[in-house]
Amino acid sequence: METSTQNTILITGGAGFIGSNLCEYFLSLGHKIICLDNFSTGHRNNLKESLKNPDFRLIEGDIRNIADCKLAVEGVDYVLHQAALGSVPRSINDPITTNDVNVSGFLNMLVAARDAKVKRFIYAASSSTYGDSEGLPKVEDVIGKPLSPYAITKYVNELYAEIFSRTYGLETIGLRYFNVFGRKQDPNGAYAAVIPKFVMQLMKYESPVINGDGNYSRDFTYIDNVIQMNELAMKCQNAEAVNTVYNTAFGDRNTLNDLVKYLKEYLSEYDPKIADVEIVHGENRAGDIPHSLASIEKAQKILGYAPKYSLQKGLKEAVNWYWNNLK
Image (cartoon, rainbow, N blue to C red; front, side, top):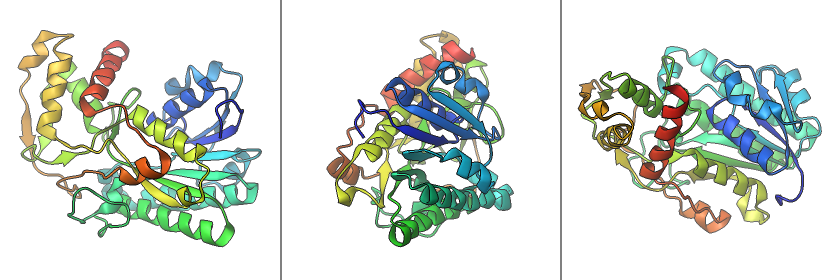
């Protein structure tokens, strides 16, 4: 895919955090975008700029409905499949719905993409697939046993994608996202991600609760690194690049204690009182892995991946966005 050529791209879950950022980016390059979303976790507000663009089409539908999937893929060159029910705790509380969306919905999209003869199906995989594998950094071909229903669903996605590549010749690429954060990430709700949730609490002078002693570490990945990986996955032409999975991360890890320290530092530049907000520690959360760190060597070597945003650089951007949009 050359940026000078207009392609039609279906982005499922396009009203969500990652999906809406992908919609805006690819519209800015002159592509036609179809967004399929049921707004169960996404927000119309995330699409307000995209909806102004004549090359953008919104289909309100559900990936659990095969008819919606078939409608959405008509005339599509590429699918960027972001639609899913995220959150480990949500999957523990309601494994059936998580499975319906993440497995049955994913299979519907694969079938629809196969039948529509799309050029390539790129999907959001997850670092949760590494499960109880203790080795660091995480390398794509070494995984452990899943630790949550959510992790099982994301691993099953990879298995289905591989079978569709082998059996039907559908080109697939899975991107194992590691703790993605950035603009438009929802700070509200029971299953809000840690960074926007902590930002909102600190802006209200509320004490964030860190699960455990705060020494668990993550490979926090800014949204623009994720956008770069999706674009590279679409553009790559070499045969060895497809029908596989790639870690999508920065390739560094920071503890939760580090994270909160940076957040307080950057937010206190806008409001000095935030520096004095106390941090509280709670119990470790079920299904959480202690440490996560990606090897990005495969993506660098095969796709030419070169992430530009470290945690600190990404947090400064994210904090600025939250302050100006949610204060």
